[in-house]
Length: 141
Image 1 (cartoon, rainbow, N blue to C red):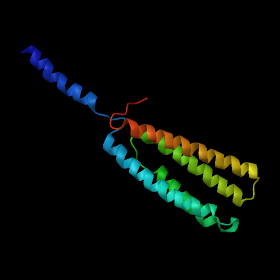
Image 2 (cartoon, helix red, strand yellow; image 1 turned 180 degrees about the vertical axis):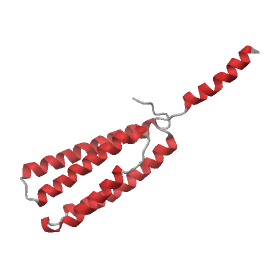
Image 3 (cartoon, rainbow, N blue to C red; image 1 turned 120 degrees about the vertical axis):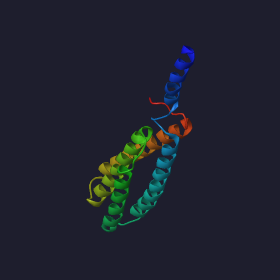
Image 4 (cartoon, rainbow, N blue to C red; image 1 turned 90 degrees about the vertical axis):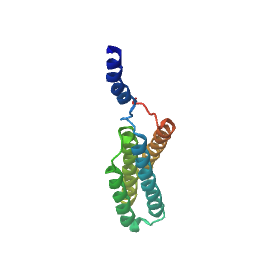
């Protein structure tokens, strides 16, 4: 009888340890879908900004800032916080690059900001690929 009681008490502990609070699959998939939607919107806005003249950049920069704020406000599970934050850092770097170009800063300054943008975009893509590969059983690092 004692063995059954111990067994019954152990079941909730075992089940609790099976839940994935670090990266709950449904929440992660929903957050990834939101990130992808915003990334697509961002790509369109960046294309417009890159094709705009220096004098016409203020509108596209404002659009990019709006999208960056949306990314920063995304609620994501713990496993995607770093990816969201890195994506936002990359967006800030791109916006800073456009502002530097608008302000006629040196080509080196502008290029450095866009290199940082590329770095964070690549990092975000790798991190998201890792999360996709481990779902539904991602473990905290």
